[in-house]
Image 1 (cartoon, helix red, strand yellow):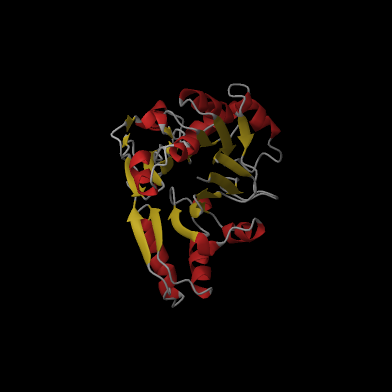
Image 2 (cartoon, one colour; image 1 turned 90 degrees about the horizontal axis):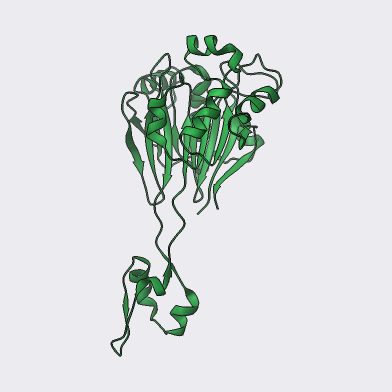
Length: 305
């Protein structure tokens, strides 16, 4: 099952040349999930061939402008492009009022239904479940209510050992039961144990999106272990006091977080515009967690094949 994330924006509060504010899109089994939607996100989607018509779920971490100011424009473009199918937006409660007000004064009535699912920044909980994944909110510690999001694959069914199944001439109607772990009894009464006919599926993979937050062990406990971790890294550690003051994280702290949650890979983003180049931030995170990469816009990171 495809499980990958493409970075659309990696800057923090203000855009900088070649870096847009935060947005990224997950492709999970060919369904698209947009996570945060800063201004300029539509342009980035066009640039990196992300089709808005394929997005059915949008997640907004909090109501600082660099995480949602592109949303009403995206909703309007979906409307103008003839969208009819429903859209779900998972967000802080006040966002609905903001969107409704903008649509009201532009005299726009969307051609498609929008369902708002309100997040609670104080609690961890499952907000979406479908045939592919669970999505959970992760309480973070920012200057305003803010949530991270944890995307977890559902455990897949077992895989048939094709050669063995064909050798025993097991009828196709039995395949579903075998995949669920049942044994097989042949017409002559012989019982074949399930583990001789199937293989265990790969372990479910996970992706944690940790938006703006003061570094803390509390939220790390909610995501341990995780396959791939995206963590904000607004500042270098020589600006730790500034990070604490603004409830942000340093690149060094992001590396430490990756170790604590037993991540296989760390992606750092949400870089302050003060940094014209990002090598120092990358090197600082890699000094404690070597398998770190930058959230380079347009780059796709594969979580699971």
